[in-house]
Image (tube, rainbow, N blue to C red; front, side, top):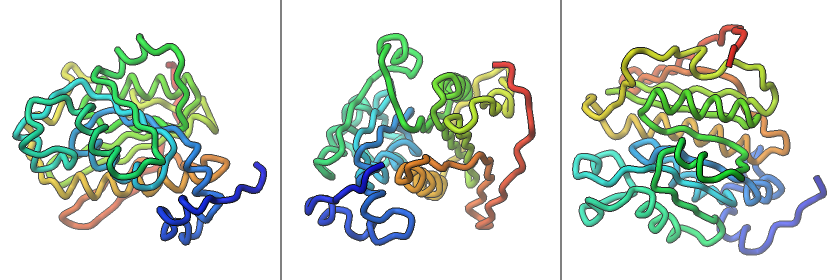
Length: 248
């Protein structure tokens, strides 16, 4: 890539981030040309959307079919009492647009499966699945693998979280989500699970840090890993990924 020159506007808005080793001026310009898809705008997705918009990523697509409920408010930071009953994707877009005018934000009030059926042309640098649906994670992982796009999934329950990433851009033969987390008879969701808000923040902060550094590099250097995160003990355990011949 040719040497890139930052504009005064980018230096003004993201100067502190530019100082971070591994970002610098060129990395910030690269970020401004990246496209990210965030699937799910619950506890994880709202925090992710805030961090990624504030990092200066060029384009973010927000996908979620749900409306806002009062029970969402203790952990889903894009919403307040005035938003109850409104579509999560539309409210998120409106609030995120007030953060900066360098990120283009697109909202889709539908499932990821429906989005793929309606939008035949799509190009993302990373797919970030923040849903609580096992079935959706299987779908988004297989899509990422087919399109050779880096894939990240995060999930939480009570005081624990899971971070999962596969860089299909580097190696499209890597196992998909279903290979490592096989589908069960039920599609488990966290609708009625115990939940404390800061867990979502901790898990999402870890994921967004990795995403920002990966997107700021020419090579999209995202590692393949599974990490188990326990907020109560402050333990982060990285698991060794099995070598699996993925049939999907």
